[in-house]
Length: 368
Ligand SMILES: Cc1cc2nc3c(=O)[nH]c(=O)nc-3n(C[C@H](O)[C@H](O)[C@H](O)COP(=O)(O)OP(=O)(O)OC[C@H]3O[C@@H](n4cnc5c(N)ncnc54)[C@H](O)[C@@H]3O)c2cc1C
Image (tube, rainbow, N blue to C red; front, side):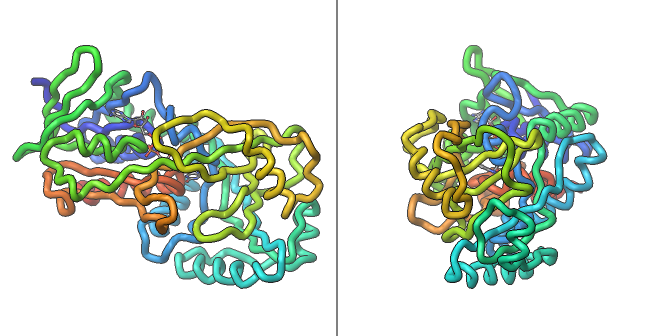
């Protein structure tokens, strides 16, 4: 049987950030990735926004790791030449009855340690974003955009510079916990059996399935796995917006919002479609609801301006209609298996939080 010090399952932004962190702590790390390249799933199908940490419940992992992760990214990206821009975001109320929600966002942000939001009057909004119809707004100056692929390459580069390696086409099929580690079965054609001291399950959409396949992890500790797709439409032509625009939404979903990528392309989305299984197909029949929703704050959207872009799938651990869950990161204390960490429900703001998640996992394992 082969032996490994530390296996990270999954080469998305979160798995790679953890691999980097553990390699920097002096561990011998191998990343086991089912696909033939990095970042094939959620990490390359998202909004690429560096979130400020405004909306999440105070004290939740999403709130804490988002704020810490944002600060870490703004230090790391310039050091490693990862393309990013502190472009800012306006959260906009399009009707008077949405203003109390804006006020609540500001208070929630302050409780989360996000102290830089400023109030925008109707006139401020008209001056800042003349194409946006708004009666008031909040400006978040620390919201940014990032090249997620560049970030993953930087994480991988750092990890490799500290002795880590990556094995593609290495799907984890299952395994078992034992008294001094975890045994994994890896690879579809000629599966290898590998004994590991540490295993980090960062398999994103498949993390609950991977946990169920490892004998010895109590099923009661594994959350259900749900999938919720988001579609993005892109806008033909030049951007009518100077920053990200988020309409006031309901609950933790903020409507069809505007993001810009580093090339200046405007994207609208993501919407919400609950799925039974992973399916990235784009449903073009959703265009009508996008036009309607966008015209609440951008009335000049011309007919025919939206083009289908791409989709991404949120790794949900609560079902449709249930409150959004916090990130669930379980170490030995939660599931009883020494050397194992499972990461579940790492949806937004997982990209922003990735470096802070790396620190959190190192801490759970007692590494410096
Ligand atoms: C629509 C959408 C928009 C989002 N927007 C933002 C945003 O703007 N800002 C932000 O901060 N966050 C955002 N997020 C969240 C962010 O994209 C995710 O939190 C992050 O990308 C998750 O990374 P990951 O590494 O956990 O998962 P993934 O990127 O999905 O990586 C998991 C990896 O595990 C591999 N894998 C799966 N099963 C196995 C197996 N059995 N063996 C080996 N490998 C396996 C997969 O191939 C994959 O490469 C968004 C998410 C969605 C869905």
